[in-house]
Image (cartoon, rainbow, N blue to C red; front, side, top):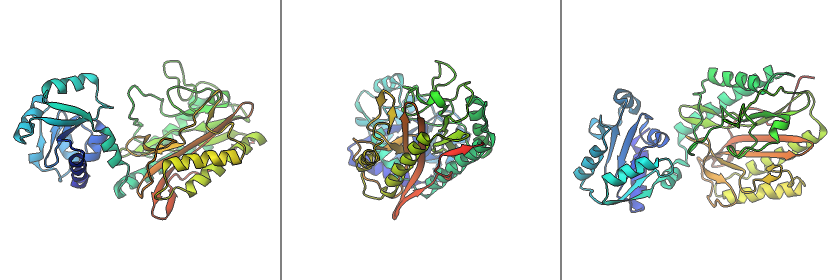
Amino acid sequence: MSLKRLKELQGRIAEAGIDVVAILYSRDLYYFTGTAQPCVLLVSPREFHLFIRRGYERAVADTGNWLEPRHLSNEGRLDAVANKLREWKITEGVLGMELDTTPAEIYLEWQKLLPEFRLVDISPLVLEQRKTKDVEEIACIRQACNIVDAGHRRALEVLREGITELEFAAAIEDAHRRAGHEGLSFFRRPDFFMSRGPVGSGANLMTASGIVYSIAGVGMSAALPVGPSMKKIEKGEPIVIDIPTLYQGYHGDQSRTYVMGKASDGLRSLHSGLKDISDRIISNMTPGKTCKELFHLAWGRARELKVDDCFMSFGKRRNTNFIGHGVGLECNEPPMLAANDNSKLEVGYTLALDIHMLREGVGAVKLEDTILVTETGAEILTLSPRELFEVGG
């Protein structure tokens, strides 16, 4: 972490005509300060101050030496924020907050505390800044992808006929943790849950969940209808693993498809077409390409291969506007590889190309990789071979 990110934020809010912003969300706090302790980061175009609500000693240690004591307060009361604004001679105007992550109760408290200010959403501006990853961030994402591969290698060791989805997932999760996975995945969505990650097999891959807009498994109960179940894995059926990992706050995201025994010709054909589409997109993930162009390129290739009936399908439902997403401090973040995203790829973007096929009577296959956009094109950060894995006889 460094002053560079804060200085860039100051420039962005000045350009946007925002007088001051208050950062409360843990992922954004970590991005700008190096700590995820409960804090309020107050930033104007000329000043900044970190109010540490709890865990002061830990937060100071987290931030290192670059935040001077004059920029820190061991203070959790909101009226301290109002006092600091008066000290800065900012008594009215536009106040930016992360309105997509701020509970209504907190919003109303701030509105009551600072009635002279008009509250606006600062999240799009913050997320725009976070799109481009620096060298330190990329190194963390690389390591997260290394950890994902440890889970893949474990999957090849433990997959056997009769193992339950839950036992299979637990072995993979254990390998992730032993390799350094921090144990959570972050999503910028309220009330979001998905177990440790989507895992499913056979018929459980054919049932869509409204929680995760992907092939996700059915979960253990209606209380958490995503991820592995107690179903036993049977010979010849596809199994999808999509468990993301976290290293020093940054995610690695990968999906692979496995079969216990021999895959059917139909399943092999589906996966071959899926990899063809993935290869085509990755080869076009160059600086200047728009997310929208890549989305249409994927669907164009699906039509050429005559698999558009099952590409990104959920049986009777079809997701037609999404083939991937940014990866960073959140597992799913901008930009989106979607029909309505005109963002141009830039050097330093990290994205997950997240595609699948589902055909009734055949099964489901999925292939997802984390990609870094470089000056010369795309670099695949995920390490596991990009094939359909047939395990055992």
